[in-house]
Image 1: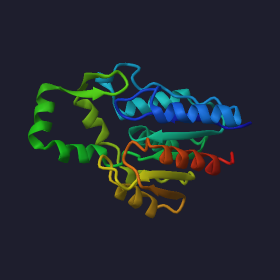
Image 2: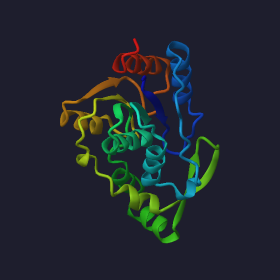
Image 3: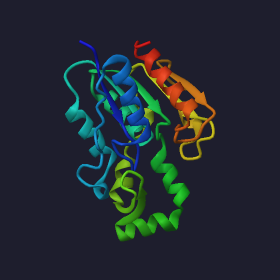
Length: 214
């Protein structure tokens, strides 16, 4: 039985994300594969957590071979789902958001974090819905409980990361891959979005090669 493919979108995005749509079209045209794209906005963006995303994906996985492709926060989610679910055979991570909760704390600063915690919610621009939406501080508290150093399952993993990424620095993927000989890293001359044509072509080639579709 051929594996089921899932694409996990990033923070404040949705199933219509450009990379998700691109990969869905490519997989359908070249291999007649229907790429599954869960919507992490189900349940509302305000009460989003990493734990909720992980649970949502785990609940949807078939009891058969599965391949996960995750972007940014979706990449972090994919890594944790693969850690827990043995049917996940391979993982492709696009600029995975490792260390993101700790880096958010540093980037926003102590005062902003304290204000977020005190008020309970903070607004973020949601690219999928093209609107400012509130996010509960529980998102940060939950995310701080996930430390990628605890990811130990030796599931074959490919990471694609841009050297000009100023959202998730490429060094976090270098460190993750360097500690795990089952992880390969492809660095591109791109930013966090990996949305330029050259990057999308490189991502597609990686999917084909790594998943045995080429």
